Length: 86
Image (tube, rainbow, N blue to C red):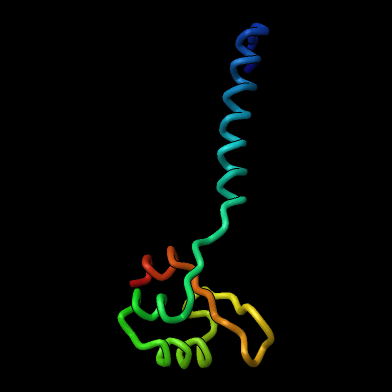
């Protein structure tokens, strides 16, 4: 199957493709909305200490990152992931 496009059609197709790609790249660049332990625990309806214990025993249960050194790090949780789980 062979398709023949005019210059104008090719330009329109290229433009539409660029718009779609730009939207996809923008989504990849978005940073997650991170919340501290207290706020994450409130979203989940548990105490901050319970959340810390859960993360200690099952680090993959709630998506989070640690800010600071390994022993005294501040836990930051992805709000969107928490609200989807709850």
